[in-house]
Image (cartoon, rainbow, N blue to C red; front, side, top):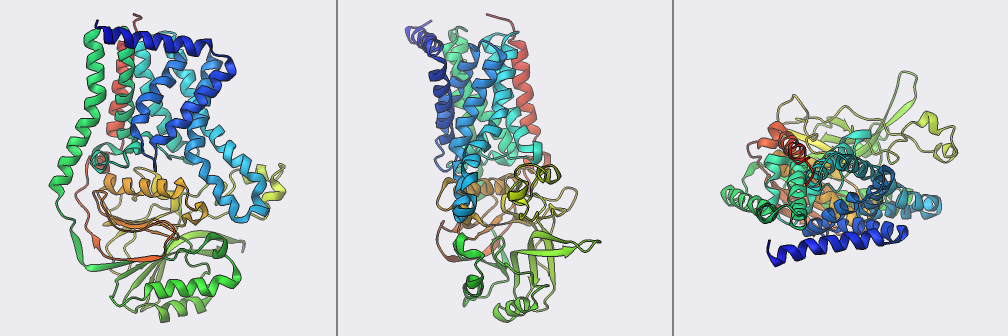
Length: 527
């Protein structure tokens, strides 16, 4: 063993001793702070290398936990810091009507991270259990596997919330992001976490060769992903477009506090019409989520104004809200995407299928209605869910998958299963709720990832930004920045052949996790 390796192991032991000797409060604050720093790996900062320090540190804190309860608490504290750092911007939406919603700000700021941190709490609990029967070497592999599993569970359980997954740490490297085409974001995250955790072996007494091999893997794996991605981009060449499908993406940049003002409706509507009428013709005009605030069936004058105010040969794709009565005559409301043929007046509706809990509906409303919040939520009308994902093919347009707001963040669930593959993805959203915070940048980054995973161009219309045309390799061909008014005129990019992920979804993720579990099992013997 070299002097450098001995020094590294001694530093590891010293660090463990320092943490062990801290008062409980200081130790808790440190773990929380490290979780907070971990959020810097996510967009918009994208400091991916942070994971190579914070995840091994998190594992270290679990190796000397005295009990299952303590391990759960340490995991929960780390997660609370991570989710607070990554999601604090959610509270910005409540400032739109501060007089009505001020009391929810503390609940949103601390409650959301507290709930999501239960996942990392169970991770800590599970690692503690593994370490009772395994060595620290096996524990490293187990930690990586359990981190990946809990991330996946967070993305699918209780409607799912796959926000700020580990794979998104690479959003500033388009080359590394190309690996999404075969691994998906869960698979890329699993490879990233595995690579980051290999650094732990440098500090463990496993022998010079093993330590060097682990360090080599930690460095080589990201490097190989970058090399392969750079090669894929070089092979791709220039973006290919549909010759006869011209897009016009409209970003009206209407402030959220003005969007629903009765006295602003005519002005906002006219702004959309004005931006949509340019000298060059467009086949498809795209407006953001809820750009139309009136149901054209209930208000026929709005439909007439659209047909009179937009190019006759165009198709309008716009977010809108409409209502339909049920058999008992009760009105049900839908957050939808409408396709409208301007010449004929024909239309099709694609209601949002993946609704935001507490944002678009109240879960367990029957039980909430008798609770303390019942009176406060009584005026909140639930949206109804549609039957998507859809494969829309109206009015001779190239088929597309409509995705409203955060429907685009769900990997592997942005196209209709069992149906023909669409030619493009459409994401309409209104991120005006969140101002100039990390939220809109994160949302945009996750949308871009779906284009690479599916091998499909993604067109994004956002009220206040970021609107963009993104090709199948993740190139942002044109964009309107956050907080600006603008229009994008561009031909529709063509799709590429579906990659491994588009055909087999989480196969790579499952394989990596299986490998980690196997490695943990084979390393269970204590050293």
